[in-house]
Length: 97
Image (cartoon, rainbow, N blue to C red):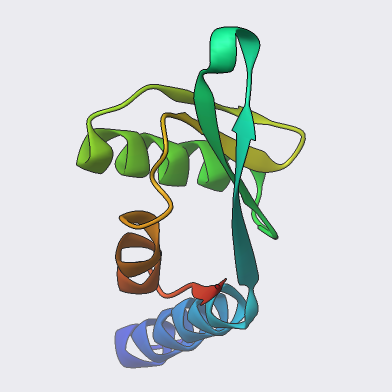
């Protein structure tokens, strides 16, 4: 296999990953936790745990907040419902509002 064939194959595999991300429709909701603290919940991901943690890390850094990954969802401290959709769309996700 030539180097060009390998590069073409890798590009094709990357494009399939992009399709799977674009097909994921995420939901954003708010929960009140202990002492009335708001927590923004992102659900609908179909990513590996490592990819989900990496996405959570990028979002936490962009929003300047803490959070965690639990049971296939991302939980962010605070109310970020208005700021999240544009960030998620930049990453190629669809967001249900």
